[in-house]
Length: 454
Image (cartoon, rainbow, N blue to C red):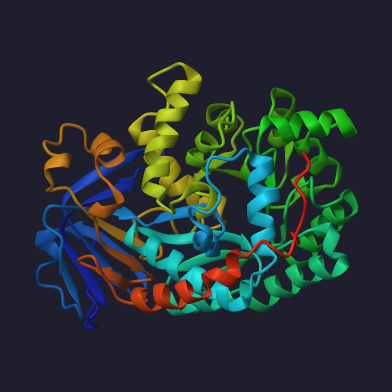
């Protein structure tokens, strides 16, 4: 971990911080009084502050009193839905979809999506999120925002079978057109909505397209126990069994939620020969009063990575992955009846390496180490709510807050420094979005993009 002796200055050196690192067994550790040397958007070295003191650098950050973490990853969200934050409150899932969200989404324009994505990216950058997996409509607009904001993203154009083959074709065209865009910060996926809105024929065709074009698939599956029980009653199979018989389990697959995964699903998931991961967003499950949560321990026992997520702000009210990390730990302790699961270090592992693998970035993100992309956040632990520090992992997971993030960096570029957002004009976005809200939230037309019946 010695920095290069090259005469060219590093683009960035972050000095005098504590760095979260992973050992060769992926165990979480912390290096004190460390410096991170960044060159060409890549971490070149994690070294001592003394060794980095005389190295030339185009820019330096003195991060004394701060902890450097890999940038957080929001493994499943619908970023533009921040425009619907607080619109559908205290409702059961079916009413939430049918009476509010899907009628409103029938009004969406590309401009609404773009403004929502801008506000969402601003929120995530300020909360230490450097990458997100998005699954929505009019995704060309989201791709533009990702490019302009400097974030990293896995993007997919959602589709339903009710749209006909055109919906599936748009999802493929989007994925192929934007793959590798924004200087490589955008990766893409095919994005069927869910087994209850996309029929078996479309799911099987999606699996074939994914294998042909080397694309992952991002979809909702076994979101809650009701969906699993309804699928069994109507079709004799669970949603995960649907994914098996349509061969989607033999693609690289990112499943959203999975609180309805049952024991009989686990052997199927274990035998899946693609890269399978599940994104958990516990705040939304609590809001909807779902009786179960993502079975994190059972999934990890069969080698399935579980990444952290928020879902959309229409259900979660927030895009705060920091909160998801704390809630994942707490909810798993409660559901397991065991305070030893999840530990703070385990929660940090889910927030870092497992989340990176979930979105297909396991070889390039999720860790601060030589050769990894320089996606880094600096967290200030000098506040009274984080002192004293007896267990740094516990302080980060259970005491620190997203507002303690001081600086957010993607590919070595500073997107927020000392809480100042540098790439998005939030007041202008809020002003324009506010002007468009009356037309967006109108439900008098009686339309909806789909019907929830599960």
